[in-house]
Amino acid sequence: MTTTYDYIIIGGGITGSALSYELANLGSRVLLLEKETHPLNATFYSYGGLAYWSATTEIQRKLYQEGREIQRNLSQELGIDNEYRDLELILTVNPEDDPVAVAEKFAIFAITPEILDPQAAIALEPLLNPAAISGVLRLPHGHINAEKTNLAYQQAFLRLGGKIIREAVIELIETASRITGVKTPKNNYYAGETIVCAGGLTRSLLQISGITASVYFTHAQVIKIPPTEIKFNTLVMPAIPARLVLEQKITQLENQGIWQRETPEIIASVLETGAVQFRDQSLYLGQISAIITDPSAILNPMAGEKAIRTAVGTLLPPLASLPGSCHHCLVAFAPSGRPLVGAIADKVGLQVFSGFTSTLVSAPPLARRFARHLLGENDEIITNLQKLREKLTDGCN
Image 1 (spheres, rainbow, N blue to C red):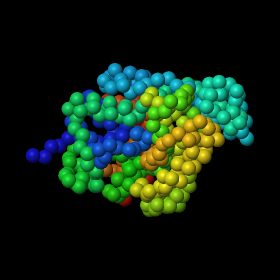
Image 2 (image 1 turned 60 degrees about the horizontal axis):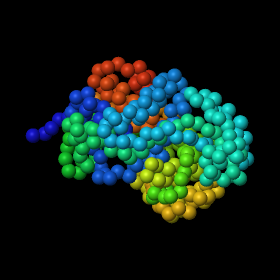
Image 3 (image 1 turned 90 degrees about the vertical axis):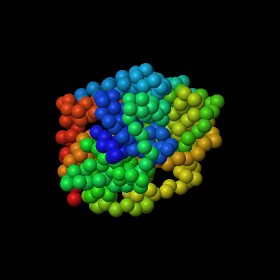
Image 4 (image 1 turned 60 degrees about the vertical axis):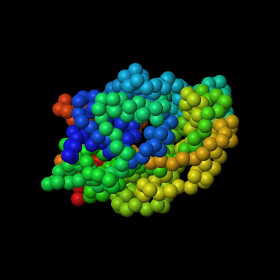
């Protein structure tokens, strides 16, 4: 006998796991499909930062504060420690740049930074090289272990009666102009609504069914360092976010038709020098972000590791030579930092929940709100996002 679910969720990263849990918590029958037994996705390789300070609108402020409170209380709610903590964020300013001028660009955010000179910066983070900075911007920040948070959501989901199947979705099933389920290499699964939460694979999955959506991805590389005796006090990132500048090129590339074909060539890339240490003393170093339209493209890990270590060696010399390895994942995003949340194109039975910025602080509250919205509760924030999304979605062929 074929089981028909209320919802099929495609993708077991933080977005899919959080939404699956919230829907099951409201009594829905939910199937979560994740192609990997041990996913090495953007959630797994996340720095774990909660940038609640970065809200620029009243709606964002409300949402990010909700996200911070959810993460603060998630261990108790889900029964697994997500390792929430308050952590100093240090945004480094290059020697050739003026910290005061850089700080002025942060005036739009809910919390504005404190400017520290190099001496004050190394008092806060002794591993910094004072010669590599003209100063830093200091901000309050939250931090979690994203991998453990994801696991907590999935375990709680299973306890609520949800089902997780480790199979790749290869096609959406359409019946009489309605999406009725999905096809995997092994089975067909059916549901009243299918929700794509596939992160960096969202775009290519939708394209299989002839749907073009304004959700994109970068190929990211980071170095993972096993637990070490070196103590790192803060989360360090550059004050001028090169990755966001890279993402702003997307509209131009879309207009040129570049995203309509999957190619393995690197169109553009940037390297951001950063570092964070987790509770178990392991670290992530750096991030290379590259625009490559083929989601299955293979990057050179040796070249990526060398580039990251060279940059880290200048800013944080004690960390550069620690043993570790370079890893690769896809990172989804949408133009203007507005995620796709809700129905897409003219496909009845199909929803999208993908393309988040500041995912770990924004996705959990949006998952909670979206779940209630799907079950009939009006939500101002979800409605607002859907109106904005309509301007960014190309539609369906």
